[in-house]
Length: 314
Image (tube, rainbow, N blue to C red; front, side):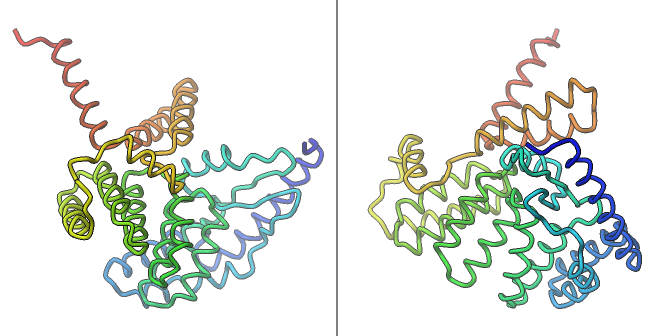
């Protein structure tokens, strides 16, 4: 257990290092300037100008080469910019003998490295993408998006066992339906590579549970039609028990991690009791997304039923 005196010393050191980093960022407009650069890079990326997207980030990459936040046995520095991911980190990475300092409010390093890796990946520069995504995951180990990006790189390079490892890790922390859709797509690709077509069918079926997008569902149907031509698997025999057992066998979950759901619920309740409306609304939205599409429809139907009983038509 870290002593009060050591904790105070580490806090003082953190403030000094934060001031040093803030000084380094002054030439690009401080943290506000960082966010503006990230936004410009993202715009270029969306326009498929990946080279421009990387070039825009270069000033940030130069600053990050000389950052003062070096972890030690006494203190671990992380950069976790999403609040839910920060709560998850505190839940999964508790270490009473080490202080944790989140530098994101000084500089969102996880976002910077993730954006840099994403642009490099689409540019086909896999070595640069690997450096970027490795840094992103180190700064923010509870980011499912960073780990999914790592899996994308593994897929591009044909490193299938590494892809499986990263997707299983991503699913431990995922709290967005959109990320679950990506996870099951990569799992489907992995099992196709392994010629385990029955399991790939399960992954496609599970993927469909997290999407209401017509385009995604059409893609999933196309995948399943293709897969069913490669196997004698009887589509009508698909059932939850078999899918759950298959998921357990290969080390991944058929739905959101129950620990993540519990963390979101506890965080919502804490914010509600503290009368922190903004934070409570944030976690309420997280809890809403921690459902399959069927669960969301059931919740809507339940609310409609409640409203109809509360406000009967005369």
